[in-house]
Amino acid sequence: MMSASIPSEQIVALLQWYADMGVDVAIGDEPVDRFAESAQAAPSPIPSPVRSAPEPEPSRRTASATAQPRMASPAPTMLTTSPDAVELAAREQARSARTLEELRDLLERFDGCALKATASRLVFADGAPDARVMFVGEAPGRDEDIQGKPFVGRSGQLLDRMLAAVGLDRTKAYIANIVPWRPPGNRDPTPQETTICRPFIERQIELVAPKVLVCLGARSAQALLGVTDGILKLRGRWLDYELSGQRIRAIATLHPAYLLRQPVQKRLAWRDFRAIRTVLEQDAP
Ligand code: URA
Image (tube, rainbow, N blue to C red):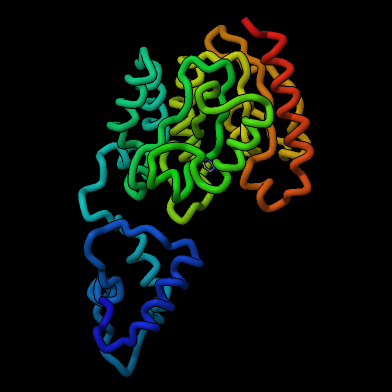
């Protein structure tokens, strides 16, 4: 707990440091003093002067104490089941959704992915459910977590400009992510989180049934297309995405967040977007 005697500029500096380190979400309403907890949990000291075994290092003790669940509310029951069982449950639930609304509803109630506990809300999708082109990113960031819509932050604004450059906008495209909850501090989703969420995005693709699927970034392509190459090798290559008998043309391109960091690579993305436009035009109803 922060003492009132700490000068406000030190508190501001500490919060800034937390934010810089990626700690920008509160996962409980009340602060928890982990040092007091670990002191209580520590084994009672063996009377000195003779100690038969060295005491565990303080940092180790703190780490094991912080490894305990920290949610203010009880952990959802599914988190206690094995990852395989959660994946199976995810697959069965996703398959049972007959519409996008049902799928969204199922995800709102799905407790198998720990990211739900730290995210503010579900970020399901944006755009037109009957779109002929679907874009799939990796995971929501801070702005998406606040607004509940994918790609609304800086990379989303760039994505909108890229869409506009080929005559598309969110009334003609459908946008979602592999993982629909923001990983805390914008860390990468773990392989396990991706595996658990994948059945839902697969079902989402199946229900939208776009003509063209665009994977934004390597992680999206790797999760959906079963490829392992890096994005610079993968991008711009047309692949077939097959799901329950549907064949969808799929392509990976550079993630807008990467383009914000490497603007010189926009020319490659521009090439991919023109290829996407050509395929959509050829296939126009
Ligand atoms: N990056 C993503 O992959 N998805 C979003 O929704 C926003 C940023």
